[in-house]
Structures are given as structure tokens and as C-alpha cells.
Image (cartoon, rainbow, N blue to C red; front, side, top):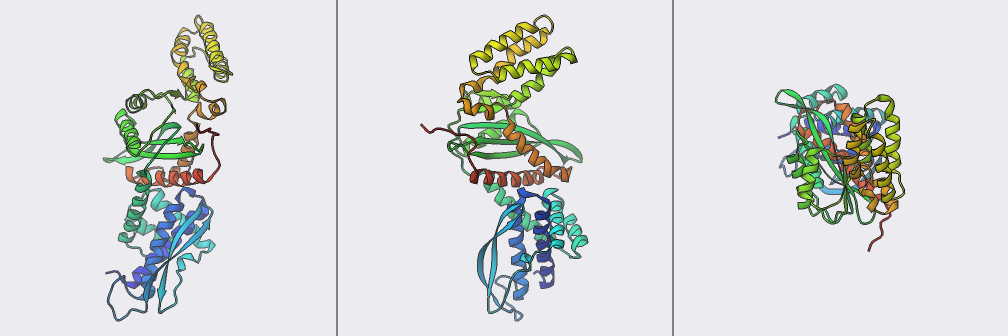
Length: 391
């Protein structure tokens, strides 16, 4: 049984957590803050009542009386709270009495806990140093469990029809078996029939090999994803094989940005790079598919003598970046690269660089899921990404 004094320490610690995240811009963590503060307020009410839920005691000072919804506007977004109510006594959670000093302290605490995925032992040490409080590991673990359950529900939510799918991966450092290894974070986003973007899912494992991609893509299909008209991604071999296996026959647009990067490996002289880059941009910016193919043929012929390896590479690879010409002209610019995910990756990196190194895949997946879930909510309430005419 938790002593009321210990409960007070724990609730104040959670109070500090929400305000730190608010100050330093971990805007992907608004959902996490809500869960943590709700737990803090429950603990605080237990202390005020002088009893745990359903506990029989002569020291009880009142009774719990449900919850009242409250939306807290913060710099990280709207935080949905359930404020505990009481009867037979006055009670208002100190967790909601936010001050500038405690705002800074909270973000640091939550950044350590849920951005770095540190151990509960270290969490206790951090909050003790920051706030002069002792926090039980069980309460920290409980809050993490609730957050993980909500994020898992978001990752496994049902999907529906999608017009365009974009896939990409990034890497983060994770401890594994006593060593530091790269962990692949696979991300899938897309454009819905209403023209809005959506984050479909994310997966974190120690490999970007075909089996990881195949499992991830299968999970999207199992959740109901269908109707895809085109897929955009780079030419990673594992992703390429998995895509053909799970989505056979769906047109594939090879990311033009990655194509231009890949081309530099086949340019024999440094002083030729700008010329080759300009030729590729001309092909990609052509007015239609026929003109792009004509310009590609001219470029291939141009380099057959001076850069035969480049000419051969262009002939076999650049056509994979021209699939987008079959889509409506007003869609092409936003579909010809995987930039939609690249920008997401920058948002993820902005948060993961604080951690530098994650203790395991689960802690990494927790942070990335929280960031992406928040972005997905913004996309759903924001303006359309593409103007899609419904047949």
C-alpha cells in the first residue's frame, strides 16, 4: 500500500513533467503529457482523500466523485485531461497550477523519461535532483504502461482507402546485447481520398531488411489499407522486394531526390556533377512523360562516350522516376519524391537527438509513435495536401 506522503511526492513529480515538455517544444508529446498528468492528479486526489481507491480507513477525509474533462492549451498542442472530482471536501489538483519554474523542470523530467526512455531507477534520481522529491518506480512504470497502450492502439487502428502511399526509413542508435547498433524506424504515410495526409504507421526493429519491411507492409493491409494508386519510395532493395510482394502491380515512383543523389556515384569527374544534375532536373521537370523520355534519351546519348557507366545507369534507372507523369499534373510535384516523409524524419530527429542513444527498441518506438500520432492529428484537422477529385 502506498503511503499518502509518498503519493504526494509522486503527484508533484508528475506536475513538473507536464510543464517541462511545454517549455522546450516536444510538441509530439502532448498525448503523453495528458496521460502523465491524469495519473498525477489521481495520485494527488488519493492523498487529499487520505485513502487509496476502495480502501477502508478511519483516516478518510472524503470520497472520489468521478472526473471532469478539461482541455489544457499548451505550446505543444491541446492536452486532454480528466480532472478528478471529490465530494464532502474541496479539492483542486496542484498539477494544474502551473508556474514558469516548474514548467522548465517538467520538460526536463519528461524529456529524460519518455524522450530518452531511461530506466525507472534513473527517472527517480532525476526527479529527486530536479524537484527534491522521491518518486516510486512503480508509478513511473505504470504511467509508461498507460502511454504505451495508447500509442499501440494508435499504431494498430483500422485503416481504409488510400490514394497515394509513401514509404521511408531512418536509423537511430539503440543498445542491444551490450553493444550499440542501428535500429531502423520504418514509416508509412499517405494521402487520403479527401486529399489530406495521414501517418499510417511506424515500426522499429534492428534491421531494414526485406522481412521487416514485408511484416510492416502486411500489417498495413491487415488493418484494412486498400485502394492505393501509386507508391513513392527510394530503391532500397529490402523495401523494393517487400513492396513487390505485398503490393504487386501497383505503380511505383522512385524518389527523384534519391535518384539525383545516386547519380553522383556514376559521374566520372567532379566537374561534371553540376552538368549531370542539371540534365536530370530537366528530365524531371519536363511538361509530360513523352518530353521526359525524349530528354532522357538525349542525355543517355550525350554521355555514352564521356561517361558510359553513367549513361547505362541513367538508361536503366531514371525511367523508374518518371512514373509520376501518369498522375494529374497538380499532384506530381508533391508525389515525385519522398519529401513528405523526409520532413517527418526531421521532426523525429529534432527529438531523438536529445536522447542520442536509446536503451531498447521499445523506448525508441514510444517516442517516435508519440511524435507521429501528434503530427497525424494535426494533418487530419488541417487543410488538404492535394486536390483530389472523387469519381
